[in-house]
Length: 373
Image (tube, rainbow, N blue to C red; front, side):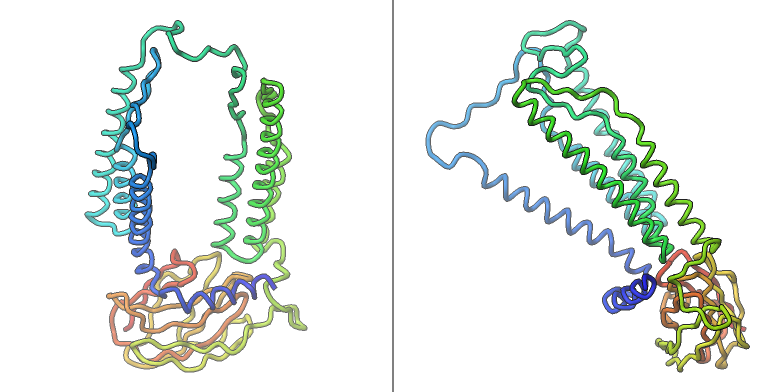
């Protein structure tokens, strides 16, 4: 049921997502730039409308107490964000843009570092108390001041997010286990935040907040995440059978998904593909998906005449497809999504002699080369 829901979601999203993942990734910096532009515009409008609404004497400028250094306004965070944007754009576009992005990011970070060094030079020297400074706490915060205690939750949330992203890539039960890990971590974080809020309310009544010392290691959560990782690895390696990946036939072999129809591109229309059992059928060319990678990274096809392509998806509960593109990135042939374990045979129209590439639109890291000869 899980893989059927995932396959349906992928098939539905293909109506709105550009099949060329390379072009889609190039649009990410444009979208980020639009979000940044809207945020800056919104911030400017807020500042323009801020301030007192009544007439009278102007606001008095704030005066920093003696002995306390307050850093002034700075453009460094904005410049660093611009540098980070160009760096990410360079990583996506590649080539000279990567060098340009690295240089811009380095310049903005150096500017920020120099500005902070100047701020540090203005801090009053000496280890003693200065006039107007806050009292130095001795082991606990001053009355009325709340300092959040140290927490392992950000680290656990990063681990949970990693497992969730890995599940999105692998699919099947790995996705479910990644989601369980993320929910487990977030529920623990929510519980800690609730306890901290209750402690702050208590401090409002008593005037003191007991942080309770250093936090203990979350051994139970670490053990649960380790079990989830082991289960995901066993399911992905097919050591533990993925019961949701398909319906078993009488002989014990997974049943093939039936009825896929090849979609044609500018190079010619595809014809209906014949569903096949998990054993590889007779075909001119065989392409195999296994372990979220192509078993054959380079294949040869007959040039100038139609041929039969057998697509063998050996990843349980994971959808894949095969897209053949020319040197310019235009699609020549594309199969429908096929959820493993299953094999289908497709009639591919004639392709001129030359070098081509093939990939999976669901997993862009799956790349290979095709030689028509």
